[in-house]
Image (cartoon, rainbow, N blue to C red):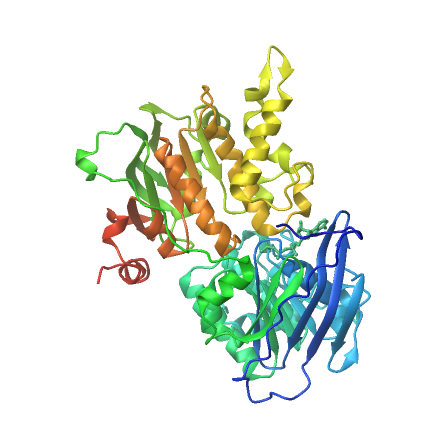
Length: 541
Ligand SMILES: Nc1ncnc2c1ncn2[C@@H]1O[C@H](COP(=O)(O)OP(=O)(O)OP(=O)(O)O)[C@@H](O)[C@H]1O
C-alpha cells in the first residue's frame, strides 16, 4: 500500500489504531506538550501525503518519528518548519496556535530543522552558512569578525572547534557539514530541533558525538524530534516514539526503550518483517575459488586518500569494505568506478585494464555504481522514475532505430514492484519521491542492467551506502535483491557505515583504516565488535 489516494469516493478509511500514552513518561508528564499537532493533512497532486497526523512533543525529550519510506515523516516536519502549508489540522506551540507563514517565521518561533539533504550553500563559508537568513544579520550583524568568532564558539560547543569558520562549506566532509547545520540550529536558540536522519552520513564515533550533543540540548530543556531508520539508535537516544503509516499516526508516544522492536516494526509495516540477511552462497576459501575474477585492483593509490590497495572480486561474490567515514573506503570505490583518477596502480575488469578516470568506459564495460550522494551524483531529479531507471541502458531498448517502449515499460514496472517503490507510478518526477524511494530508484537502474541477457549486461555493481535512508522493511528486500544479483553471477563491491550490514551481506570483508587495508576475512568469521575495534583502534581484539 502506498500513501492514501486523494479521492473522495469510497468508504472512509478505518480509524487508525492509536496507542494509549505510555506509562513510564518523563518527569514532566501531565504538563502541556511543547508541541501539539492534531489531524494534520497535506495533499500533493494525486497523493494525500498526510491524512490526519497527530504528534505531541514535550520540552526536554527526544521524540522519535518512525515510518516506512514514504510514510510522511519529511512532509510532517516540513509542515512544522513552515516549508509546506497544511491543508488541514491544527498546531499548538507552547499552548498557542501556530501557523508559520514560512521557514523564517518557524525559525523565529524557535523551531530549527536539520534536513536529510542538508540545505547548506556549498560556495559560502562555514560562518556565512551558520548565520544565513539570521535575524541578527539584518540588524547589522554582518561584521565578519563577530560572525566568525560566534561561529567558532558554536562549533567548539559542538565538539568541532577544528572546523575553520572561513572554510568553504562544500569542502567539508559529510560529518563536518552536518555539524555546520547543527551550529545553525543552535545559533537560533531553538526550543525544538528537528533532525531528519542526522546519523545517516555519520560514522560510529560521529554518532556518539551527535548523541552527546543531543543529550546536552535536552538537558537544557530543548525538545528534539529525531527521524531515523536505525532502530537501535532509537533505543539509545529516544524517550518516546510516534509511528506513521501511509500518512497517518498509528502509534502516538510509545516508550522508546521498552516497546519491543517487533511491535514497532509491525506498526510501521503492517506485517511481521524478518530482519535477516539472505543466505550466503557457499563461498570457497579465496585461494580455492575457481569462479572467474571480474574485478582486480592492483596496488591502487590515490595520494592523500589511500595507498597500495589490492583485492579482487569474483563473479557471484560480494566483497564489502568496512571502515570509518574518511578512511578512504568511498574513495576506493570511486577510483574503481572512475570518478577519481588514481595516482598509481591498476583496475582490471575481466582481465583487461580499465581506463583510469573514465566512468563512461567503465559503464560500457559493464560496471554500475550507486553513489553515496544520490541527489547530487545519481539522479536526474526532474526526470520521471522510469527515465531515471532506464538512464544507463537506453541502447537496450532501441531496435533498428525504434524505441521498444513495451519492453522498457515492463522492465520499469518489474523493478518498481521488486523494490516496492512508492508511489508505484513510473511517470512521477523523482524529485517528488521520499528519500528512501529515491535510493531504490538508483538501485533499480542497475538491476535493470543485470536483468537483460545482452552485451550490456552488468558485470560489477559498486554500492556506496546502499541502504542509506531505506526503511527496515525495504532493507530486507534490498539485501535479497543484492544477493540474487550475485547469485546470477554479478560481482558486487560495497561500502556501508553499518558494520552488521557489511558482515551480514559480504562473502569477504576488507577492513580499511587510514587508507590501508588492515585485515581481510570471510564475513561469517567476523563479529561487529571486533571489526569496530579494528576500524577505530587499528588492531584486532
Ligand atoms: N513535493 C511533493 N510532490 C508530490 N508528492 C510528494 C512531495 N513530497 C512528498 N510527496 C509524497 O508524499 C509522500 C510522503 O513522503 P515523505 O517524504 O514525507 O516520506 P518519508 O516518510 O519522509 O519517507 P523517507 O523515509 O523515504 O524519507 C510520498 O508518497 C511522497 O512521494
